Image (cartoon, rainbow, N blue to C red; front, top):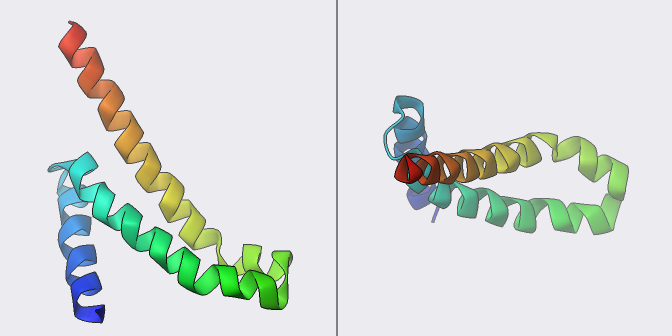
Length: 84
């Protein structure tokens, strides 16, 4: 499973950096980060509490919100282009 995740992150990350199919490349990364949060941060929340989890998960949440921004912003731009 780890090689699949690694290839997905490298390929989709490269596509985002190059600006090619940004919203399409963000979807697999969004799934990847959601699984990472669910498998690592939720158990930590129940074991160590909110503040320890919030401190450890800030990078994960920043990536999650950044990917959501790329998907939403891209869809808005496509809708604006169709209207004009």
